[in-house]
Length: 70
Image 1 (cartoon, rainbow, N blue to C red):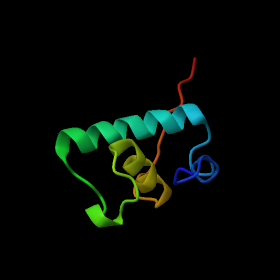
Image 2: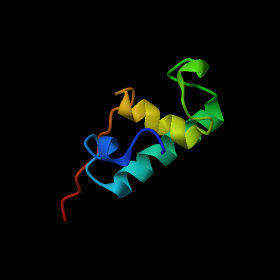
Image 3: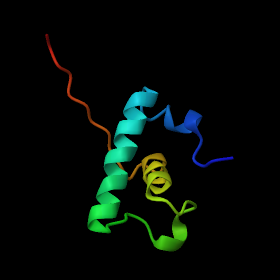
């Protein structure tokens, strides 16, 4: 089973689409900048996408979305 679970993450981000978007952006940042918010040994996942989801679950990523008025 993958950790963190999608159910836990959807309590933080209100849609799967936003979750994917946030994780992709953070994963790309990790690859480009080599900046991680936790110690290497604290991550359960080896890949940056999983690590991004772990950071989100632990509250290390704050999700803010702008609402567009049409």
